Image (cartoon, rainbow, N blue to C red; front, side):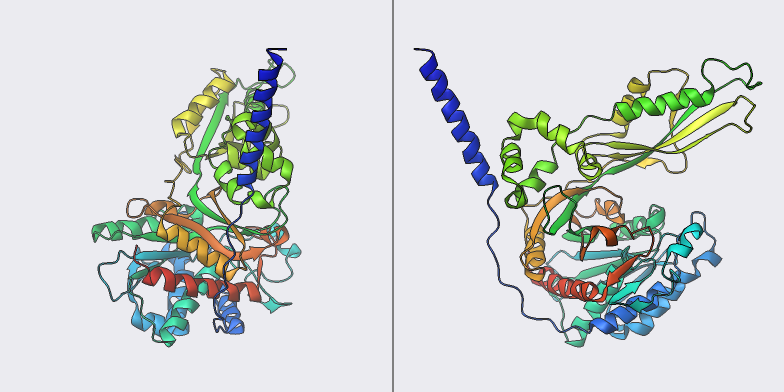
Length: 489
């Protein structure tokens, strides 16, 4: 009995402690008043997006100047469509096709900010053309949507920024802080000749930036299990990128007398081992995100998340079950290409597998290489970094306790009806990673609310954006440019 009473007391206090932590996890941000209405011409904005979608600015690896004429056409289209923007902002052309604009502020003491977009788009798979509702580069406006390649990735953001600045200039607005606007031409093929060179130009001029806003998280629905409401996800870092090539040699010969494993079998086994033994998971970036959206979660998940120190194995197991959450908790790999053999009755002389990895911050390229070597454990498999795609580590982690982030959070909630906002690790690659040498506050957010169905159009079929959603993007940028343009940080 003497032992039982203290034991019961300990259990009671532990349970109370767990529930108290859960209550704090349920807190939500206080509601704020929406901003006064901002006058926009959403039909005109939609027409602008339609026009630029009709310019098939597809980025191509090793493209000749003759392939780059669409980017010259976009430059001319900007000059024609946005006369005040073109007249009032200083322009620098980078590497013939990328564009950097400077909107000079009235107070030089304030460090500039930069808004980024890219002009290029991915190609359309010819085999999917019949599944499109029309020409992917028609830019048609129908049923309340603008349709076509680039309407979500990311000519929408290009047009929204341009219309925002043009609209502010029409009202004779001049920011206190200098604002840069950058449009790269090769983001879809790694951005080495576009945004990377824009940053080199800024560095050569000794220019530092107080904040950068680029594409990234959106107002996402259905992305987080158990949450039906839209959540404004702001990328504060992005995963690294690495492509590894697995190669195995074999002895050519007749397939009637095969060895126990051909080169293809060796590679297949290596890929299967990797699939069965992924990189170890971590909760580093999921817990802060979940803490911000805790009030939207079921109580059971709130309880487990609030006490992740105790329930870590349960969380990791649960998050590993969905592709989206699994990608948030670990460095992922995906075998995307496999090659080997020339005929059905000839043993292959060699086989290769191309494996693309996305690195969670904290995992280095060497960490991934070591993991592959250990898991495969087969000297017959040669592991190397793909010469064409290469790789880079995760981007810097931008702070969320600064005026730049807090004001961004505020504007998102003002414009989008007090939506919950949360920081997260962006899973894809953007041009903004190049800005780390000149900026420590880099945020990845696209101010558009889309459904999972619409999201599938990004790099996919029937890409589209609603006319209302596009107009809301201009409202957002108008508000944020004025906030960032006047705040002293």
